[in-house]
Length: 267
Image 1 (cartoon, rainbow, N blue to C red):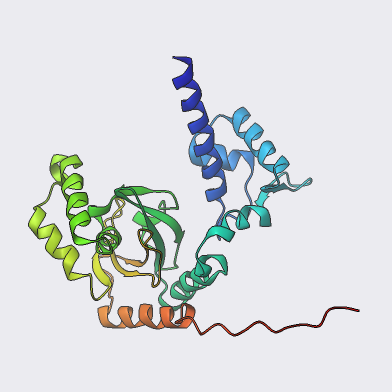
Image 2 (image 1 turned 180 degrees about the vertical axis):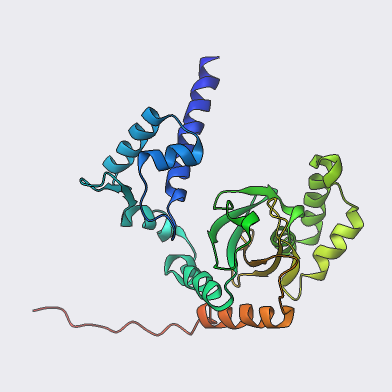
């Protein structure tokens, strides 16, 4: 079936492009071909060809001396013009960096993709658990399996939410199935406070304090989560206060827009 094979190959290429772009973070400002090959277990020849193509497209820069690759501003800015203002102007990134600096914990930004919670961005903190060191942007798991997912479900209207929860339960394996009424009660309980202490998920075995990012478009919730171990000495009240203060500082209520200043035309 040539058509199906072609579609499959295109999907693989798209996945590999995203993998390359997500490799770069605070701990990996540069990468060689072999860095990418080892991280994702990809063939060296096709990886080298892919990186060269990304250089041609202006998404990567290749140092002519070290032969290492790094992200370009174009890669960082692609898609930002169509995003909410707090993403476009970098406030969400400043929020994550502030929380890492204040708490020493890892911080995750999570979105909803269909019935899955997906890590959009992950910031490793100095107190990060060993079990979370492999977590990174792009990872997905069903919404019902982590605190961030349950918070995002709480933003959905009750009727639609019930349908999503029933489908999540129907598609879950035997070990992950849950009582429908119990799950709905947990989701309803966080509709008003807009935060939740619970399971971090993604196979980490960690705990999380998750909070909804304010003023997001309907159907596109974002959640910020502080990740910590079950044995960590965490003060829940202090952690919640840190999250609340950081959100107020980095994501303040929008001020009333002032009329733009009229500048005289140049003569």
